[in-house]
Every structure is written in C-alpha cells, then in structure tokens.
Length: 291
Image 1: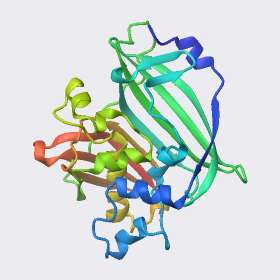
Image 2 (image 1 turned 90 degrees about the horizontal axis):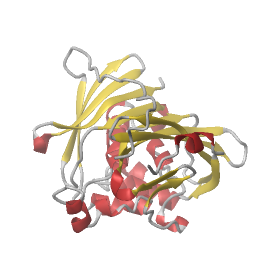
Image 3 (image 1 turned 30 degrees about the vertical axis):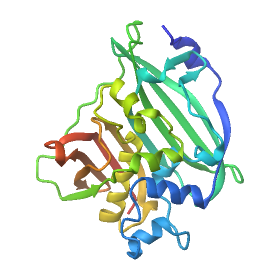
Image 4 (image 1 turned 60 degrees about the vertical axis):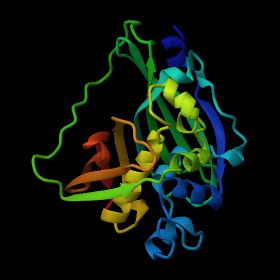
C-alpha cells in the first residue's frame, strides 16, 4: 500500500508562501467562464482590473498558476502518501472564507493530511489548507479537499462520516444556467492544474472518458460565480462557506443547471448537466452566505 496512515496524520504541516497578482485572478475568472459578454458591466468586473472583484473560489488556485513555475505532478506525494495520478479522483471540496481575498497579495499556506478514511477498495485522503495574510497574519481562508485513491483502501481504518444528500421538498427557488466553453479546460488548467486528463484525448480515453473533461474545481467555480451573480447581487464577499461533492464529469461545451433553495443564510444547491438528461455534476452542495 502506498499510504502509511500513521505517518500521514502525524507529519508536520507543509508551509509555503503563495503569491498572486491581478493577472492570475483575471486568468482564473476567464477559466470559470467570466467575460462571455465583454461589454456587460456585470461581467467586466470579473475580467477587467478596474474595480475588479475576486471570486472566493480563487483561493483553491492562489499561488499555483503557470507564472509560479510549478511543474505538473505525477501524482499525490507527501509524507506517508505516494499515489499515482491515474488512481486519484477529487471527490469533494469545502471552502471557508474568513476575509475578502485581495486581487493581489501574499499568503502563508499551511497544508496537512487531516484524515484518511477506509472505503474498502479506495481510501479517501482529506487534505486541509489554511491561509493567513503574510503581512498582518489575519486568516484568509480554510479549505478541505477529499481525494479518492483507488485500490488504496482495505487497511482497517474508519470509513469516515456518512452524509446523505437531502433537498428541500419543494420546487427550487431559482434555477441558474451556465454554459461552459469548448476550450474552457485548456484555459482553466493555466491556473495550475496541469493534469493531462483535461487536455490529452489519449490520456482521457485511457481513463475511461470519451474526451478530456472539465476540471471539477472549474465546475465548482462556475457554480459559485453563477450563484454570486444570480443571487448575491454580484458581491463575492457575501460567500462565507461553500461545500460540494463532485458527482459526475462535465465535458467542455456542456451546460450546468444550478437548482437553488434558500433557507435563511443557507443555500442548498444541485448542479446537473441538461445535455445528459440531468446527470448530477455537484451534489451535497451548500453555501452559507452573509447578509
């Protein structure tokens, strides 16, 4: 087995300095579909540096773009963990935003393995990252990434918490629609995730897909932007938390329908692909918002 649970859980957190510029934010926004109508003032604030707003989901790529000089990874490697890229799947993502993300800045990012769950044939590795402002030490964001590692389970560990996706027993309050571009995965990967699954047809075919798929975190950002634009008056600072499970793949050029239910300060979301008979894309999705 290429996972040593004890070593992974007791290892010291890895700490790095992450820096980003307005250019990185603009590229990320383009990668999640912003700027489709370049003369629409509501779209321009995402893709033009004048009065630019920053989507909170940018936290997932801050400091990881091409300009950082980082090379594509062959897999998931850290103390106690060495899993081949072809075995891993991004299963879920959480984000807690402590303060508005500046359009340029530097943060101290601490990463650790928070848990490892035994799902039988697979293991789920829970990676936690916390970021603080390098200048004043104030917290910026905390993220949690659930990574499925095929063929790495069966070690007798805890299966982790059970979570059932429940939706309100009424029609959605709003249904938002976002269409992705055919080249969107090629653009999004420039923000740091260079996995060939999203660019190389042969690699995608070997992984069981008809063609390269869109990054799960791209879909995550597309849905966040749609909700901010459609329900939060275009104000990204109103997002407090955002949690999802990645339930299905999306091909670039396909559409995401986002059904939303609002109960106080909590939005329940379900994202599906209408081109494939409503196949789920994101489930177990909630967003806590500020007034």
